[in-house]
Image 1 (cartoon, rainbow, N blue to C red):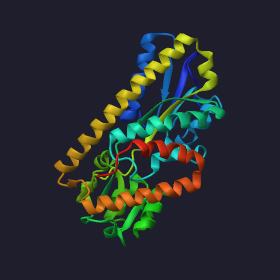
Image 2 (cartoon, rainbow, N blue to C red; image 1 turned 45 degrees about the horizontal axis):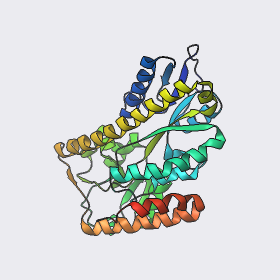
Image 3 (cartoon, rainbow, N blue to C red; image 1 turned 180 degrees about the vertical axis):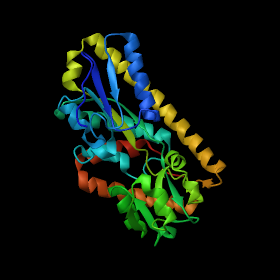
Image 4 (cartoon, rainbow, N blue to C red; image 1 turned 90 degrees about the vertical axis):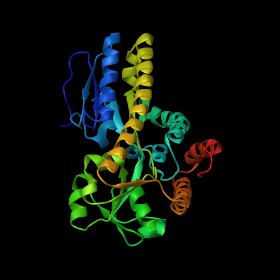
Length: 312
């Protein structure tokens, strides 16, 4: 389904994710906040029902929705600065992730503006960790293992550590582990809990590989149809939703790691050798990204690293 009618006067907010995900619940709260303030009615169209996830920015540009939510790493082909979200081992924790967004936001706003999109907020998913059948003390331990991949970053990561990339959708991960098609993967603790990965692997490393973010945006044409007071209400409600979303992401991350432990998995941070290895991998990815993206990449990475302390 690529189009969906709207109640007269109501805005349409398109997302590719479930309404009961923490991102979906946060958007529902945003909608309710604005409804209580009066003047702007928004209908949430979840799970790709208005437009598939990858097509949501275009749907908003074309006026099939007034607002949209999409994962930023999926927007990088058109707006390369959004690709910083999938640079591995650059962001160590939520404080770093917040700083990255502060640096990144004006660049993303600048990139989307010519396409008629205005940024409202960004909320991260829990950080990506490493699941493995066997203990991992250093990056070299991944050599020869079959690693589940699902995008360019994970494919390149598998290549750099000498693992064999195996493209497996998340819904098929359990089957792939059971069949011996994969030995390790990088995904969040929350996704691991949802898919009960403890049935297949025993080790989870809290390496904070990256913090992918969902970006919520509005069509500039729709924004301009609002009066100044309504624009202010939407901006303020979005800022509250962003703060609420970051706090919920951190809560979900902590609760998910606890659930993995309770299910019998060994959950731990990376040891000193693995930490050093992933730092070097992060530097390699950053250099490659600068070569690929050019000046906009430096406009993001230089201020980001100027404030971020070295990994320790």
